[in-house]
Picture 1 (tube, rainbow, N blue to C red):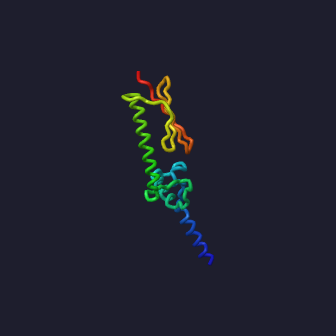
Picture 2: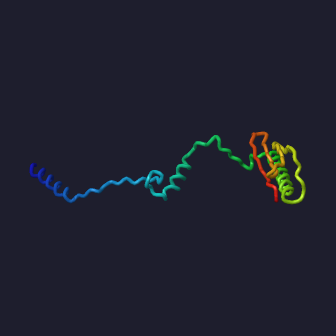
Picture 3: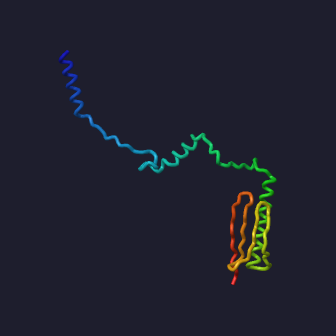
Length: 141
């Protein structure tokens, strides 16, 4: 029994001398965490997006089926009127016609036209949101 045990120990020690070890090296997978493979980025992003089941409540998803035709008509009409007014303003400054000073109400927009020393100042106010835009059309020499 002692011989068998000594023989096993001898074999183990003989094999242990020929075994080699390898260093373990950490390699990150995500390129955002310093040194990851940049080709993994698109796969990681698509995988995370596919697993995301939480919807953003502030995101507005508009669908052609959910749009109200009357609202679209009103928006289209407002755009066309603003486009016509813009065309007349520019034509009066750079071409034929005259611009009239005053205040105009178009849908939910209030337009104030004021001639000044540097040109015509047009202030557009959205009465529903309170947002304002000021456009100055310079005088031509």
